Length: 348
Image (cartoon, rainbow, N blue to C red; front, side, top):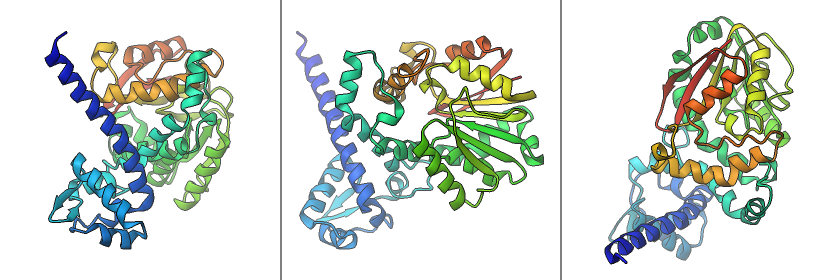
């Protein structure tokens, strides 16, 4: 027994357990508006913050102490301050690095623990719609900052000839659209194009319709309940899959349906979690997050559907290319990337 290795590992384990406990505190702070009340980066006492947010001052003090121990807030002489850098992650919803909203998606992994245990002891299946509802909104809030920052400015321009078509007036499908964040962002940017969002989860479709109304694009961004192999229509210029193909039971079938629905020369934009092709390529903080989420959410959902290919959230470019080549595409490339996403292009 190497005692130094043991002590180092125990230090890592305490750090990880503390991070898990802090994630719950982040969810609490987001829901109660504690971070937003500190967004001005001015020092505040627990009593002052409690008064601002109408919360219990003793519990607010304990919450602030945990935040200070984590390095999320600063503490000096009994007052606490949320620095502007941390405010971007915790308090500013439009920030490209906003993370607090997505933390509620992590809560589903704990709230659904018994269902996940049953899946692991059984056939592995746990459908998306059978998770706690916090997963659905939390997932949208996790991905939306990245979409808002990169989708129109970087990802679409990286595709061959797509932006001019969108500017002129294109027909676009957003498959697995969830709450419609990606659909609405594109519709707002390209007023001459029409957008059709599809998702098999009925409550998400209702949420997407509400977002389209709030975003002022309901006439050009419509939503319908359908699977990736059953949505109607053809002649699409662009079909998008945002962080969803790996969750599907039959991604080859989904890609094949997209091939049929595209017009000649049409494009598929596939956005997937960033991953290398081998496990050892993904033994890093991003891989840790996505493998853990995939164990509880993505892979069980795929196993709940027909075929059950179970790509997992760290499928990697080579495996995804194989899916599209098997579906009949002969052009597939990496268009661009971010630390969290691969943006892949397939053309008909």
